[in-house]
Length: 379
Image (cartoon, rainbow, N blue to C red; front, side, top):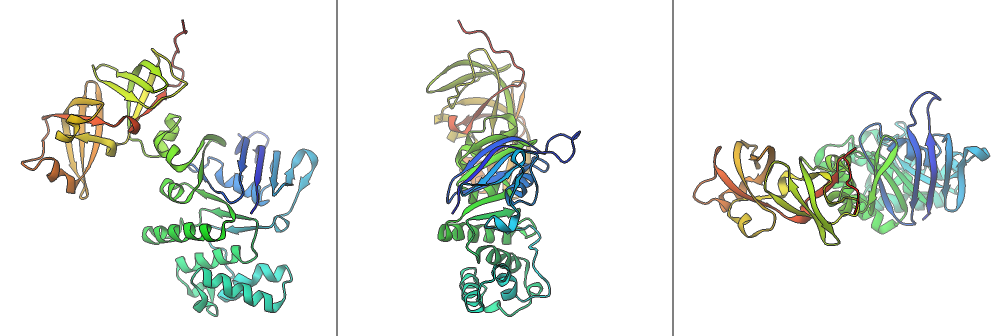
C-alpha cells in the first residue's frame, strides 16, 4: 500500500491551450479506494495518467510511497515500469496471442521472477478472480467480463503498492458492470491496495469508493465521502452531476448552526435546509432536490417542509410515474414508484389540474449559492 501525494499538478498539452489539469492538490491515504469522477474533458484521466507516468506533468509534483516520481521543475520523471503500480485499462489491453496464464504472468516475466514462483503467483491470483480453470485458454476466447478479470489479475499479480483503474467497466453491459462492481469492492476489501479509479458513472463511484473527487474543467469541485457528495453537494455543478433534477430559486430568510431557512421566490413556501456557513440572510440561492425525494399525498401531511402545488402533467414510465407540479412560478418534477401509487391513493391517483400536498425532508435539500449573487453586508 502506498500514500500518494499530488501537489499543484498542472498538465498542458500546448502552451496556448487551456490546462487539462490546473493546480490540483490531493492526498490519497494508504489503503484508500479513491475515485476521480466527472464528465468527459474534466481532467480525471489526465490526472491518472500523470500518476501512472504515462503523461509528463508540466508543473507540480507527484509522489508515491514517499518517493517523488514527477517534478518537472527538478527534471524528475520516473518511468511507469519503475513506479511499482498496476493498471487496468478500459480496453483490457490483453495480448491476443497469449493464453490467460501468459498474460497474467507477463509483469512477473519482465521482473525476471523465477518460473516456479511465476506459476505459483499466477495460480493464486487466477483463483482470486475466479478464472483458475481458464488458465490455458487464449485471452480473446473469453467474454468481456472474463477478459476484464484477466486484466485485473495481471495488475494484481506483482503485488503493486498502487492500483490504477481507467474506466475499466465502461465496455461492459449494464448487468455485467453491476456484477464487476461487486467483485471489485470485495477484491479491495481482501487485498487492501491503495487504488485510484477513474469513471464518469456516479453510481459506480458511490458504490466503490471510500472517497470521491469530483472534477470540473481540470480543477477539484468537491472532495468527500460518497454520502457527502451524493447528499451535500457544494455547488450547482456538483448537484446537477450527481442527479439533482429540480432547481428552484429562493431567498435566505435566516441561518444558524442548525440549518438554513429560505423562502421560495414568488410563493409563501418556507423550507428548512441543512446548515451552510457560506450563505447569509437576504442572499439569493438555488434550492436543489431530487424528484425521487419529494413526498406527495396524505404521507406528506405529517412531514416538515410542506407545500401545496397543482399537477400540470403526469407521465407513466413503467416502473415510475413522473408528476409535474406548479408551485407558484416554479415547476417541480416528482418521481414515484408505480408500486407505491396504489398505496398512497387506494381510491384513485390524482390527475392533471388537481391540487396536491407535498413535502420534502430537510436533509434531501441542497441550498446552493447563486453565482454572482449579491451578499448583503453584515450589520
